Amino acid sequence: MKEGYIKKEDRKKILLLTDDIRVHSGVANVGREVITHTSHRYNWIQMAGAIRHPDKGKPVDLSGAINKDAGIEDSSVILFPVDGYGDPKTLREVIKHEKPDALFLITDPRYFDWLFKIENEIRSQIPIAYLNIWDDLPAPMYNREFYDSCDALFGISKQTVNINKLVLGKEKSKNKVIKYIPHGLNSNTFKPLKDNDKALNETRDKVNNGADIDFTLFFNSRNIRRKCIPDTIFAWKLFMDKLPEKERKKCNFILHTDLVNDAGTDLPAVINFLFPNKGSGNIILSSQKLTRDQLNHFYNIADGVILLSSAEGWGLSLTEALLTGTPIIANVTGGMQDQMRFEDENGNWIDFDENIPSNHRGTYKKCGKWALPVYPTSLSLVGSPKTPYIWDDRCTPEDAAKQIRALYHMSKKERKEIGKAGYDWVTSKEAGFTAQVQGERVIEGMDELFKKFKPRKSFTFTKDTDIERKVLNHKLIY
Image (tube, rainbow, N blue to C red; front, side):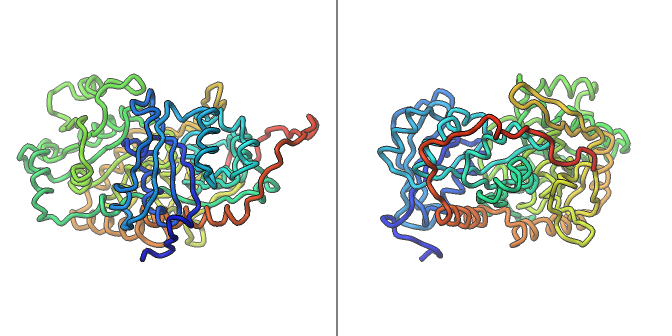
């Protein structure tokens, strides 16, 4: 019997709002892992979101599939496909007919603007829990109403947990369940493979086209502007330019992403510009869909994984890398900081507060041996009408090239050792960036929420003089 198991008829029921858990987006994968690893404890229904959902209005029972992954026989997981993330009318109907005990949200709060407008109505019946993340500082005071509309805030990064508290203030924070629940991935999917693994070597031979390759760098993320892929390619060029031709021929850079995207750029054009001689960059473009096993092979082939995003809530490709025992090169920003495990002056994994709300200024330098950090040299304040201000943390290609070079000059044995240290830590109790531990943390948070929740009154009166100004409540220079 699974630890903490509750009979199907005795479980609480939770309504999840996020991407349809059958698709392959980051939040959909997280949603599926949360459901899979808590299905012995809760029954789940989902308003399964997609743009112009082809299955809209057709309920789907995923219980059988979840049973297989969860190792139980009586899960209850029902999907109600909707366009977008739904609307007030659909939500009211689902709550009325399904009678969930809680609402659970995952993704950017702006997608739930319609929901937060009726939060008083919802919270007079059931609590709202929000697995949330925010890419960067300054603390987004424009998110206060979103955070205040929730009964539980589960921060995916340490920076997000601090942001939740800073935005709400001490008094309002006291009335919320605020917990650190970092992303967790399936450690049976992403895992280290032995060098003599037949399928791995077949993939390696195919990727390398039979060539003898000594060093492989891997990038796996979306082709969007904030991922800074042109800077990453430029860093690779600077690294390659300093190598003798004989060594350059034994280096590969695999870019697994869309080749052209309106939200990003035309990557073949960037490569042709930076490497005018065909093949001189040894860049392998991979845009086809990969199975999970194939993706795991790519991580195992790599000597390092790089992600230089200027804004990044977490960076799932770094977690995937660490679960395969692969070192990481990353910009010090957002949730990527968590995965590098920076230490404070007492040797503890750093936490954040109003005095040091981030380490992107390089306050702390010591980190896990598996991480080669690149510190941003430009913190540019950017924004949009709905998100008026946020830091855009830019590191230089030159600094990134130095870290690629540092990894390259390690021996194969050294790279294996630091990668193993990353694997040991990411699967440890302290980090616990696995789906299993993530599920355990969700259960702890939801059980606490169910104990503490008190239904809101149907309406409240607020004087205009009671509305606080949204002022900065942490240092900008630290």
